[in-house]
Length: 113
Image (cartoon, rainbow, N blue to C red; front, side, top):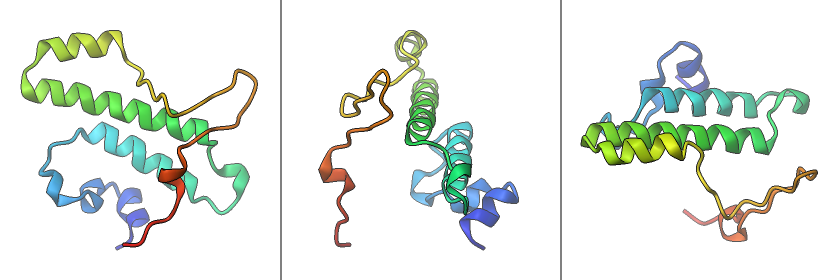
C-alpha cells in the first residue's frame, strides 16, 4: 500500500520509520502527512505555497519539542516552548512583500545515495 493510501485510510503508523520507536507525537506526524498530500496535487493551484509548507513544518517541530519535553519530564523545556512557540529558522529569508525564499544550496542539491 502506498503512502497516500495509508494516510487516506487513517493508518499513519504504516508509513512512519520504525526506528523512531514511537518517540514522536502523532499530531505532528499528521500535520506533515496532510501537507505532503497537498504538495502532490495534480494541479499547481491546489498545492500549498512554500511558506505554508514551512509554517506547517515549524508547527510540527514545536509540537515534537513539546512532546519530547513531556516524555523527558522537563518542565523547564515546556515553559520555554510556551514562550517560544515558533521556531527561528535563520537560514530562511522572508521579505515583507516578497514571496521569495532563500534556502542554503547545500540542502537543495541532489545527492548520490
